[in-house]
Amino acid sequence: MSIFENLKNMKDVFSQMGNIQEKQAELQKRIAQIRVSASAGAGMVEVTSTAEGVITDIKINHQLIGTNDGKMLETLIISAVNEVLRKAKETISHEMKSVFGFNPGDMERILKQSGGMPGDSGSV
Image (cartoon, rainbow, N blue to C red; front, side, top):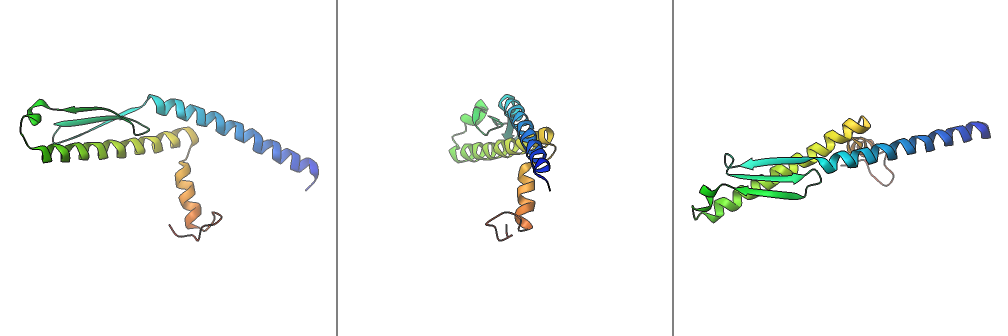
């Protein structure tokens, strides 16, 4: 391979890096605007978070507060929080696929399983 072919290949790599940076910026902008919600106890507790997993709101039905059953309330809050965090993670994965055409996390797992990641033994 000539030096000119090497330079062309390097130019292509740097060009793609710029593309990735633009897509990363687009992804961050989209994710910053997304809110996800989940509920537990047939809607008695509702939790909202950002796609990054920051809890922004918790609503508790007033009927549940008057029951004096603190353990049930705690359980419902934990359930709703766990569900909203799962949805947030799923949303980020979906957005990554939408922006990049694939989920980089999937690619990393594939490489690890095939032993393609430096320092990995191929086990997950």
